[in-house]
Length: 198
Image (cartoon, rainbow, N blue to C red; front, side):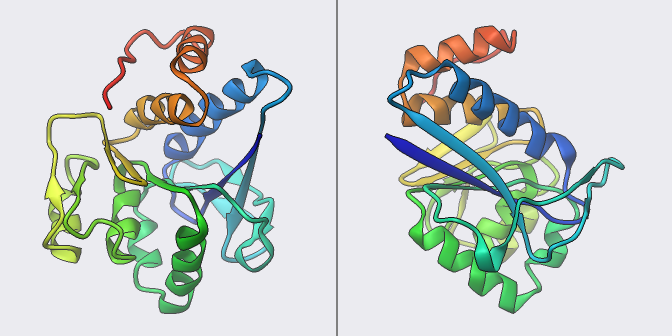
């Protein structure tokens, strides 16, 4: 079984929204049996350095036009998401990527992107506490969940702010593989706060 996970990265992205899930999934990839293969890659709008809001720069593996097919699409959050949702051409490309993915996941204010793509219509979601109003303005039928660190609605996963992306990614590991692999991953990264919530 081969699973590919693509992270869409952009300027003024929140570093931990990207790095937390990447760490979880890359550790899980090392822990699974050889018969399973989990491949991670990043992609961006342009072939250039991405500058996170935290001052760390990242070089994307691919641009959106030539990225590999993916099974899981992850939208990290950050103030830069406000620019993403005003770029119609880019949104069209992201909509195509999401429609071909088995799972689309958002961390923190990455929910703005999912809402703009219509992925949260009539669905429960969570996001950073300061972003709920933004998401509801974009998609009035979306149902906010203020209590949980991550929410699954069909093939869409959303997480609350920043560190909650780790919880969501551990849950994603349980979906892709199994609970045991998720628990092993949590132990390996010494993350004691994770509990399963379907």
